[in-house]
Amino acid sequence: MTFEELSLIQPILDAVRTMGYTEPTPIQQQAILPALEGRDIMGCAQTGTGKTAAFALPILQHLAAKKNNGSRPRTRALVLAPTRELALQISENFTQYGVHLGIRHTVIFGGVSQKNQEKALKSGVDIVVATPGRLLDLTQQGLMHYDAIEHFVLDEADRMLDMGFINDIRKIIAMLPKQRQTLFFSATISSEIRELSRSMLINPVHLNVEPEVETPALVSQSIYYVRKENKRSLLKHLLRTEDIEHALVFTRTKHGADRVVEDLKKCGFNAAAIHGDKTQSAREKALNAFKSKTIRVLVATDIASRGIDVDSLSHVINFEIPEQAETYVHRIGRTGRAGMTGAAFSFCSADEIAYMRGIHKLTKQKIAVAEHPYA
Ligand code: AMP
Image 1 (tube, helix red, strand yellow):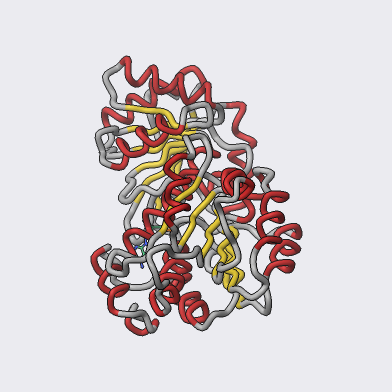
Image 2 (cartoon, rainbow, N blue to C red):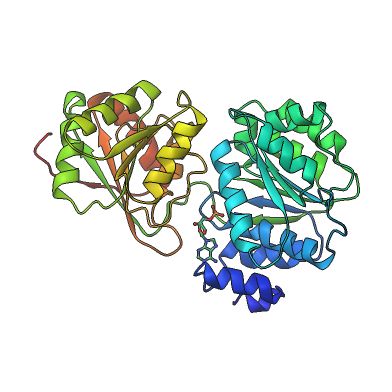
């Protein structure tokens, strides 16, 4: 299937071509036509499947068909995301996909001054991408208006619930016009998610592109059995001897992330940490340096890593094995994206063998055991 077959207008086709997309991903193939028809969507899809374009392209096309008159547009689309990183990512995608359309959008999240966000809302934007907390703050100050919203997206609904945003989301939904299109995405579907989606969606199209346990086919996985105290040496050894262009390293704790970075820097590697204790500007700086490849190694905790979207990430390294097997699948899904190959290395010490067993059970895959000098 081609993007042309999805009834997209030329300025959008041109933008996706500039992005280097040759073919719509499965979620895009399934979601774009019904979304263009105005249907509600309940999509089970993880980050990395191309779900952002699956909702962003139809929304842009709807808005382009009926341009806001006058100089001060009313907000007609709202996208809610759980983290600043994801909100920024979505906003960047709107910029890229909408490059020929002249549709205004802005991104709103906490942890930074609200001045610019305030200014954007006052001058008027067609699309708002936001995390729930700051959006509600601005709403209480009378800066955000919901009465013209025609398209509403709830992204990573499962993560929203994990992060305790349920009440904020309900408050926001209560302000939305009843007559609207709702696009709902979640990586996992629990009974709580089902209930939430039922309260928001009308006769939705159900899409399920990637079962939770499916590990990316293009990621080669290996496991390094290693003593806990040797993990840092093993990491440096691999960075020296393997062809690792760009690695995202996962630790379980913020403190652990800082320690790994400190050690890497001491030995001359370009590395930075990204986690909840870092300021917003430090996180953005680290992420941008990683994206532009001035930093070779980014060390992250799971929460901070959600929504990190780095093209051509060659390696994911599990410095610590996650307790939840699903987290392993999320982590390694950061590489091997959009048709490229990637590698995932997992460092497993004796106390983590049980977690690894859970991962084998969930993924039903045998992961190759690697030989190394630090066993
Ligand atoms: P997402 O799941 O929306 O975060 O997208 C994951 C990655 O895939 C992003 O880097 C997108 O730019 C990229 N992507 C989305 N759609 C396509 C496509 N049709 N072809 C190639 N890459 C894509």
